[in-house]
Length: 168
Ligand SMILES: CC(C)(COP(=O)(O)OP(=O)(O)OC[C@H]1O[C@@H](n2cnc3c(N)ncnc32)[C@H](O)[C@@H]1OP(=O)(O)O)[C@@H](O)C(=O)NCCC(=O)NCCS
Image (cartoon, rainbow, N blue to C red):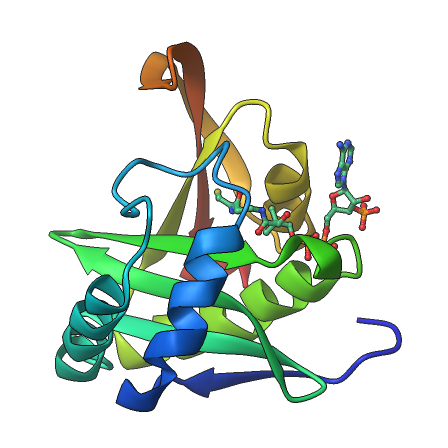
């Protein structure tokens, strides 16, 4: 990242209001419907409790801070034998390289702490910014699941990207 200081920090239970604000303004066009909408403070508290229980055992969960402000969220979560990366950032901070840097920082931590062999990313086909973030971090396009998602009545292909421990 060129000009601003980026930091990943662990979530605290006291982040519920900020997390709620983030999740209610985020661009959801290419996010799965698992994220409640609207996102209530109860949703935030439940998620933060799950995070404090699972941190470093089944997942690595971080708030993205830019010059001290909470601007996004990034995680790598184990799902059975798979581990999936997910991230989101406030619109006004987009295109500054922040997500690229956040992915760069979290992957080595996740590989090490969760003892992973690979990290998977599933991206809606039109989410060019996210694809660039993955490419810039060495993720490779492995397959395309055609018509895998229907969101707001629109059908999307889902692109599967992977980063193996040998490629970091
Ligand atoms: C996707 C998202 C994480 C990107 O974060 P970001 O900090 O803006 O990403 P970066 O600035 O690190 O990199 C974005 C890259 O995409 C490029 N880009 C952005 N929009 C683009 C577009 N419409 N067409 C082509 N390239 C585009 C940028 O130029 C940059 O690439 P470059 O460095 O080669 O120039 C952010 O927009 C976001 O949170 N979106 C909403 C939630 C989401 O979709 N999450 C991902 C789910 S898989």
